[in-house]
Amino acid sequence: MAKKNTPDASPVAHFEQSLDELEKLVDKMEHGDMSLEESLAAYERGVGLYRQCQSALEQAELRVRLLSDPEQPENGEPFAPAPDGR
Image (tube, rainbow, N blue to C red; front, side):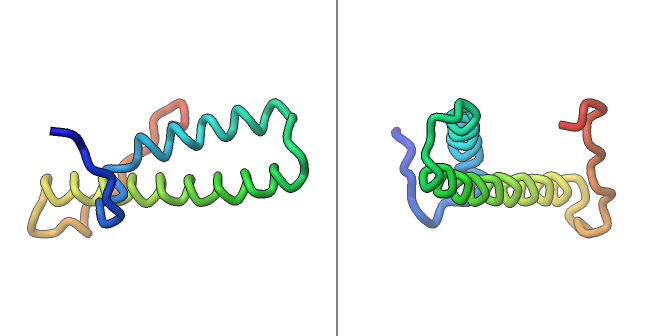
């Protein structure tokens, strides 16, 4: 069965797609072949994609906490970033 891209799907479901688009946008901007107007539009889009990715990661973390301790997910310790900052 094919996946449907519905507007009411969770942000977690679209994380990979948003991250891929963001990476392509950054590559395009780094080449410097864009006009100022194109660069501003790309930057705006990039900020939106970054926020979508951040929201999806926060929701995924909450889901993991719920699975770890369904009684008190808000009391879980925040996950530490990897040593390389990722």
